[in-house]
Every structure is written in C-alpha cells, then in structure tokens.
Image 1 (tube, each protein chain N blue to C red):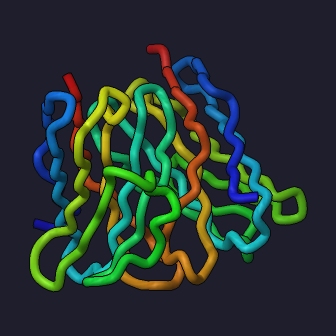
Image 2: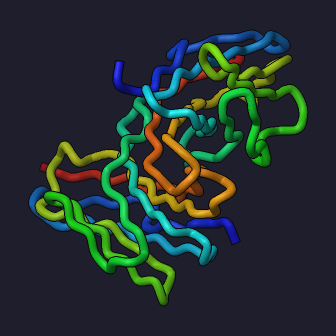
Length: 114
Length: 114
C-alpha cells in the first residue's frame, strides 16, 4: 500500500444524516490535507492537519464540518446534518513535512446527498 | 493574493500537436509550482513541478516554463496523445506555515483528437 487511501469511494447520505470520510496517508507522511471539488470546478482547500493537531482550518465551513487526525488511525472528515450542497468529491492529500514538498492525492470520496 | 489564475478553461488539440496551458499567480511567497493531471472519477496525480530558481523543467513530453518576474508559469505537452485527454490543474504553495497546502487554478480540460 504505497498510496493515499480514502474510503469509502462513494457515499450516499440523506439530508440531515452524518457523513464520515476517512483518509490514510502515504507511509512516512505525517501531514494531511483535505480538499473539496464541486462538479466541474477546481479543488478548494479545506483543512490541514498533523497528528493530533489542526494546523490550518481556514477553508473549512464554520458549521457542521470537522476534521481530526488522531495519533492512531486515519484522518477523519466529518460532516454533520448534510445538505444537498455538500454533494461533491472530497480529496485527501498527504505530504512528508513542513517545507514545500510533494503532496500526493487519494482517489477521493464522492458524496451524494439525496 | 492567494489566487492562481489558469487558462484556457478548455483546449482541443490534434494528436501530435503541442498543448499549452498557462497560469499566473500573485503571492510572491509561493515557491513550489506543481501541475496535476486528473482523469474522470480519479484523484489528481502529480505530473511535474518546478521551483522558481529555474526557468524551465522538462520530463519526457512535459515541460514547465517559469517566468518569475511576470509571476507566470505554463505547461507544455509535446506530441500530445489521446491518452493525455484529462483535466490539468496548476497549483502553488510556499507559505512555510501552511506546509504543502496547495492553491489550485481552475483547471483546463484537454481533449486530444486522434
């Protein structure tokens, strides 16, 4: 397993339910970034985490969205009380460290809110 | 100041031709400029990247040209092939406090006709 692993690949939720998206970074990477891609649009930064720390959450909506990267286990992006506008592809990327280094992306989770 | 502007939005090229995608940035703190290739339903894949201390970087059929004074950089795909048909994103990063957080351009949908 050399790549960034995201699951599930597809997630369908009814309005008002919770969505949990998981991301396991590449081996040796301790920095995780979440991005959102709306249909036919580019990728927008949401949040940057290191193990047990949120470094930058400036792109995260203030309500209903949260993220964590615990000491053990994958990073989790949690969306509470989902609405139709949350339907998008959510991508996780990981990198090795603080300096400007390569970031590698997972295959994404496509969230559909019905 | 964090924006990266990308053009064109879409591009159609004949097989064997040269595909050129342009990007411009504003933030002079950016010091790493990657290009990502994304196929439908997949995550972005790192294609090639450049730092501002060089004006050009070539990897196979892909070349980045960088103009620091103009704050512009471009991707050239030589001998374009139908398999190159994808969406291409330029990106930039470099604020040391934000790790490898990427600011993306809007994307260019490239179609290479056989």
